[in-house]
Length: 128
Image (cartoon, rainbow, N blue to C red; front, side, top):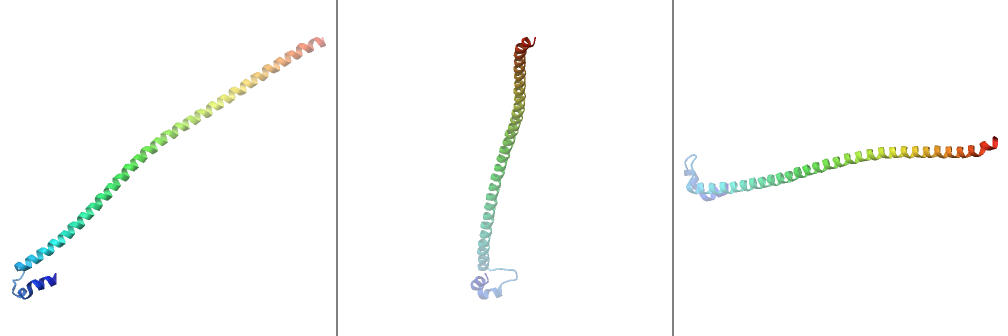
């Protein structure tokens, strides 16, 4: 910037009023300010674009978290249903085992009574 000012103004700078600029110098400063402003705007646009991209990614992540939460809730519901079904199955199997044991006991008692009756039927006439 200093070189541009010295090249454009040279010895005219000595005759310039305090805090004053010549037309040529105003033009030079205006060009420099525009260049730097454009760079700042481009940088701000880049940062804004990056922020927008990050915000989009975060929104996608939140959406996926919500979907995963819904999936987890469904899985929890299914697992509690399966736990209930397992409890019912266990209770039914215990009841069935008890019924089978009672049936076997009844069958053994009836068979024992039949055998005892047959033996008594055969043996009583022999001892009488």
